[in-house]
View 1: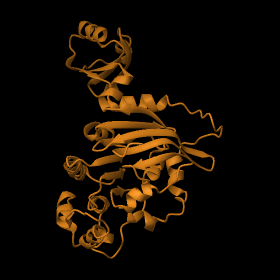
View 2: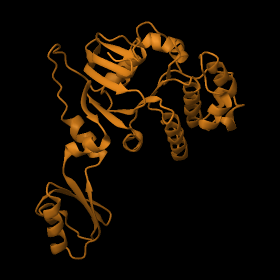
View 3: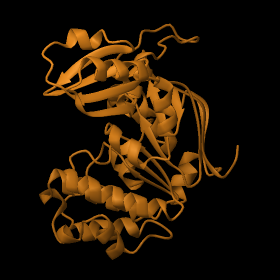
View 4: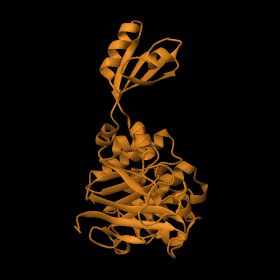
Length: 331
């Protein structure tokens, strides 16, 4: 395996009867920003746990810049912001970030991190007095201050408002520009579309698509026509040549098409009053629904039924002897 990036090869992980991850292989080049997407139960969190050494795969191998996950974490080249765990109480934000910086060989300057993460204004506040969005930003600060080569983020913008999310991704672009490798899992598809160099889409414990957002959207095919049209009946619109389905959003109609050229010609001929017409390719949400909905649920090595809660089960299961306190150490 190359020492130039992150290598996940043939990973499999089960928790009792639940097969959380099934034969996942992903190769990530150094300096890439990769989004890990999938519905609840897709195996994203379990994959991240194995990447960080918080769970050991039943089969397969992980290498982080040529090292085992445990060795990479011990060397201080990995920073993580996970969904589990909590901030240490009774410390100020500055004290916590300073303490975390002391654990790493080449940390970023604490004041720089407070500025980058938008936490300077709460630097003197005790951690238990923070709002949900402020807590997320402080968790991000404790991961960022390590100055890691690999930054792993599991649902990083949960509880952040729109302004907080915008500031977060501005910071991430700055961090990525320094040649850092970033892997993040998110339910916000627009974040993955806008900020990831590459998307890995998982469903039912498997990788079902891997590539740039444009490539994944192109796999779905088809186009959409959106127009302002005060037509009362959707049935004739759905019957237009080249149209698969018709939907309405207020005065706007949305036509999903297999042949957008034929549909567009028919629309303007039969509905000359239509205006504000837009023709768009498939969006990431459409690709997400189509590709994850078609995921194969079979397994050649295990006939046990799956469930829809694999990530939740993995979160509740013991992480191979590590406690939440130990998990906080890699932040």
